[in-house]
Image (cartoon, rainbow over all chains, first blue to last red; front, side):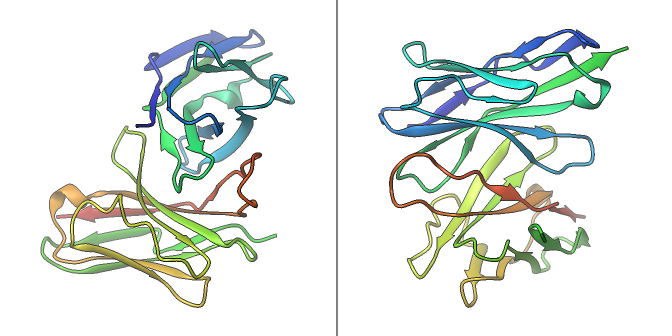
Length: 114
Length: 118
């Protein structure tokens, strides 16, 4: 069965520093995708970044990068140069290639300090 | 362009009443999903629609929950005889669907409907 584990309930980071949010996953499928979403206090879910299981390069989108270690089944999100607006809940999620749903982790609350 | 829209944004209902939640997906997105998010929790999958295929209802928590999608577009989630444990934010998402190979397409979420059962 699919499972996503986010072990950090909350994180603090100083403005302009980098932060890593941890995510490990479990699946028996070889083909799957990993996603990170941001949920600010307003409640909307904002897509940040995607990594396919066969992608050889780590995904990057602006200040977001995904540290994908397939053998360890981890897909950590790295946010560089943190900004106050990055304060939000961050969810890691996975979808198996032929599956019908995203499976979400419990989330990590990130607080950026000025 | 227009994103996923949901209505109402907030719904307060008495225990035992039925409620209907509406989702209007992004035009051209054939896949539609419903999720539920309880306070401070992650998202829980409820149901998935794809084109004319039979929906995947494997996430519906009880037979009080049902959903339909008319004309491959708008979807309605119905909760009958609401209970206090149904209180949550109900999120709808839509996406494109690939041809069965990676990469997968991201899901775009609506703003959600906050349901409170008193």
